[in-house]
Image 1 (cartoon, helix red, strand yellow):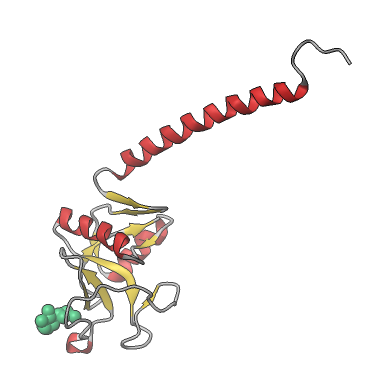
Image 2 (image 1 turned 180 degrees about the horizontal axis):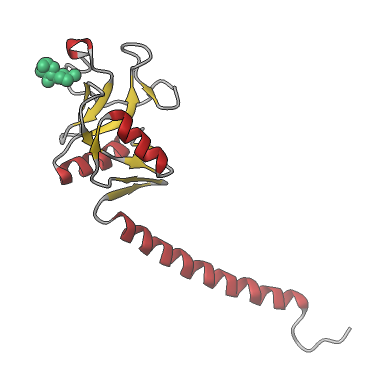
Length: 160
Ligand code: 293
Ligand code: CA
């Protein structure tokens, strides 16, 4: 077999090396653009992106808007995610509604997929179902949660 110095394996090694460089450049560029799109109305936590548009409405309206955008209402599942939600609330000085409610069974708070919540950050004394009408969950600027009537208007915060 004629050999001009570069075997087929070596050619492939060169191509892999080129692709590795291109992938690194793409990762670097993507990292920058992620920062651009979340400034200043969103937060990145691991794989999750929280984003507000500034829109305010009741729970049903907020839920619909997030679904329409291809996401869902913010549903923080740990302290790091809740801290990101808190940052948005603080930045706008407006409470948000989470994708959590006890509409189906009083006192059993669930995600929009119907699963029971696995993380919570209730304010002391909450949830209190004040006046027997509080099935939704708002987040205060303290990051603490309060159950609130779903018909109230709050700031939208979606997760993607
Ligand atoms: C009551 C007692 C307050 C509490 C409030 C909220 C309403 O007025 O201490 O802050 O309910 O739970 O959602
Ligand atoms: Ca309450």
